[in-house]
Image (cartoon, rainbow, N blue to C red; front, top):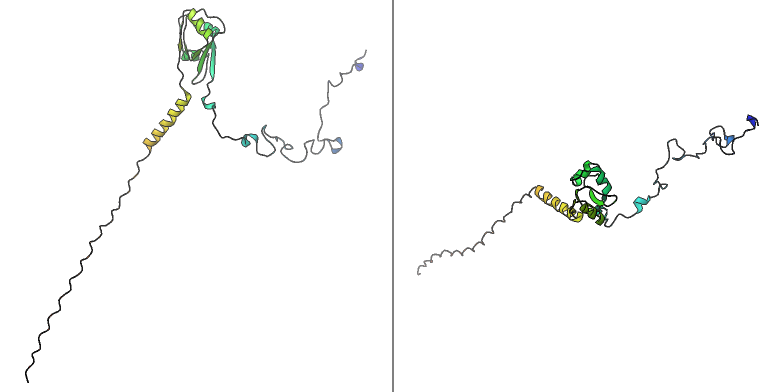
Amino acid sequence: MMLNDITAEAGAHKKRKRVGRGESSGMGKTCGRGNKGCQSRSGGGTRPTHEGGQMPIFRRLPKRGFSNVNFARTWQVVNLDRLERAFDSGTQIDVETLKQRRLISGARPIVKILAKGTLSKKLSVAAHAFSPKAREAIEQAGGTVTVITLADPAEQARAKRNSKKKTRAKTAPPKAEKPVEVAPAAAPPAEPEAPQAEPEKPAEQGGAE
């Protein structure tokens, strides 16, 4: 066998498409992009949600109604085997210590302890929830369990709204009192003038003829 007899596997090496090499090549002029439009421009294209200019789906869907997403609880899970590796016996464990050891994250995490793994150390654990097996394993190891009471998110939202109303009422400037216009007292009706007596005419003195 000679080297020139060795051929590549069919389809293993495909020639690249050469565009812009004359109209007779079939890929000249517009180079397969068509005429005009955002797809034919360099750097062009559309975003994934583009629908050709019609009203996109996220604007056609109604936004009315109540959503429970603001009141949903996202639990962060910590298993017993991670507590076994991260803490020494006799440690007081709460949300802050779990954050310091980077077992949980977030501004206000909600923690639940689950029973994966084994626990042989005496730990005092304070969390928002425990599985029954995790509680039993902690107590059998000589530790204690403290459940942190969760605040109702609906109550928190209601209190926040009420506090905003109170602060708005306190900061609102007092309304200026309008001066009360007092109507002038009506003048008493004028009494009719008494008719003046006519002066008496002097009697005519007539002489006897």
